[in-house]
Length: 131
Image (cartoon, rainbow, N blue to C red):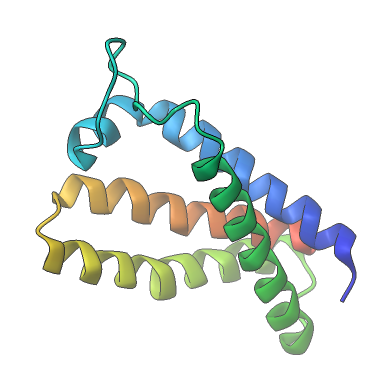
């Protein structure tokens, strides 16, 4: 399995997440109940751990999608995008909804996080097909 497409696709999905959560920062903070500092930003914002976990996770998703796309002969950007959309919407989002439902988390949080899982997977899927 070649590393370059996995790294580039993982980074693209991770970068998409940075944009996604910049757009939805305030509603995400409110819905998640995460501790905030005086600025209203998450208290752990300076900790590298969430960033390290998120980039490793994006790489795992990219590697798994690369493997699946290779087996399924998904080679066009459009098919990569829609396949990623399906993976995010039909695999990742339902698990988040289940976990958040049982945890009593706000539905708005489910929408924000499942939206990232869905569209981030689309980005990863599209980028994988460029190689």
